[in-house]
Length: 81
Image 1 (cartoon, rainbow, N blue to C red):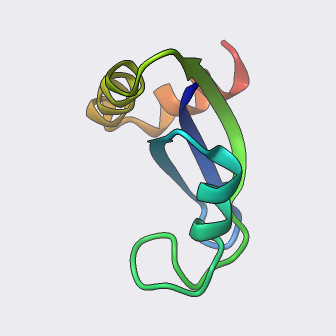
Image 2 (spheres, rainbow, N blue to C red):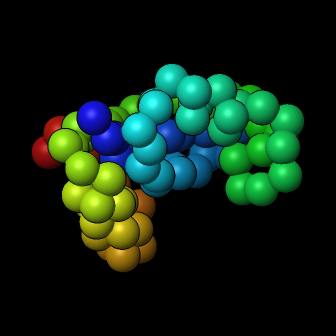
Image 3 (cartoon, rainbow, N blue to C red):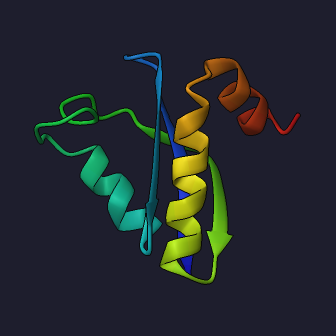
């Protein structure tokens, strides 16, 4: 099982979109003290996710959401509108 997910950080007031085969471990990594966009904050929470049978489907959906470049559209997806 693969997942496309959206995280939110209250500290940064930002979303992060990704995909993985192990959501629990991936969130631990995002909340660890590492370099990169999600590193050093430690408050990332899963606010939305979708399940897929293949890695390619999950990655395709991740890219689709990232192409939106619209906080309003992501907010709408997260809130289920």
